[in-house]
Amino acid sequence: MIVEVKSVSKTYDNGVEALRDVNLAFPQGQLTTLLGPSGCGKTTLLKIIAGLIPRNAGEVRVKGKVVDGPGPERAFVFQDFALLPWADVLRNVAFGLELRGVARPEREEVARRYIAEVGLGGFEHRYPAQLSGGMRQRVGLARALTVDADIILMDEPFSSVDEQTRRKFQEDLLDLLRHHRKTVIFVTHSIEEAAYLSDQIALLSPRPGTVSRMVKPDVDRRKTADEIRRDRGYLDTVDEIWHILRRYV
Amino acid sequence: MRMLLSLLVWFALWEAVGQAKFSSIVPPFSAVIEAMVEIAPTDKFRAAAVISLRNYGLGMGLGLAVGIPLGIAMARVKSVGRILGMWVNIFVSAPISALVPILMAVLGIGETTVVVTVFLFAVFVIILDTQVGITHADRSLVEMARSFGANRRQLYTKVLLLSALPEILAGVRLGAIRGVKGVVIGQLLVAIIGVGELFELYSNHFLMEEFWALVVIVFLFAFAVSEAIAALERRVEYYAASR
Picture 1: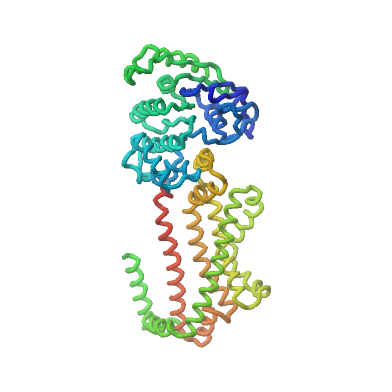
Picture 2: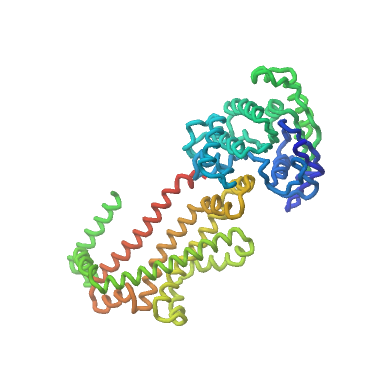
């Protein structure tokens, strides 16, 4: 277990109880989804794991060590992309290395490699405003890959991306993350997305957020994307999740 | 092009009113231009210009050095913002000219008074706009920088300041324009140095051509400063619009 969440609770200053006694374990090299309706605290939980917001109780361990802030072994992909509007793609992707003080030629070489990997080769000197939503999020993903973190935290990365782009992006994402053997913690409110992408799914119930069920999709990953979307196991997983979540909405 | 045309129309009108000799206060525009060419190379004008530019430069430099850090502090430290917020808002709209006589009493009749006047004219709008820029800096960019391990200094230099740059530049431009007012009003009231001394001299001796020539020169200077900063603003506009 590369990431462990133990009895984590969070109440915001305004009195809203976002999370209560959450326990979760994330196996190395797997993609775990936090799935639930809006207001179930899934983004809060992800940001606590990222060390971006403090927890009130419990602890988060990454590779056995308790974390109290961001660390180089975790990289975040943001829902709204969070790209520097004044910097081109190359500088945005290299930004994590720039903050670590890596020399410019070196960090740009690494950045170019990942820009090509996410399929943005040739766009190095474009600015975020010149890119579509899907392309911007590819920049966000490349930036997270560039810092060579073992754990990638993704906060609804496809929610601002249109449907057609999203499918292609999901397939590319799976290939990339498997190839690099990343551990991924993925927040989404889309049941189909969770069932398609995940090795395991943590279902969160709302107000206060707590883990209500763990689901392991019975999907054969050797199949192609189109086969998976017609796969019995995939469709059953979607059904099963819907029957659990419908109680909360 | 349109601006040039509008200027030409006004100059023609001015020339016509001047030639019609309605009042000796309004000499023809051509006479003003002549006077401008005449006074520009004189030692007296050069000396006045040097003093005025020095007063302006020092006052503006002080305004930037105090205004931007203070604006940042007000945006980032809640207590500082609460304590100073009201005062900055009062002073940004207050008629600072009324304070110049007090400054003269405290600082003496000299360049220090003018420098402080320029500073007071410019600093508050710089503070205010910097504060607005930093307050509205993209929260998620700050979060992003933190998640990738940015330290405090990097957070400011690589994210917050650049994110607030459009607002800061707008504040600096407004401050620079107010600063020109400050240098003229300060020197007029002190009345024995720089451009202010020349204004006094010309109006007391009823040298209207020279007087208007000086007015045009000061206007041109203020316009040039404002345009230079506006050009800088246009360079950062491409990303300001996409935030």
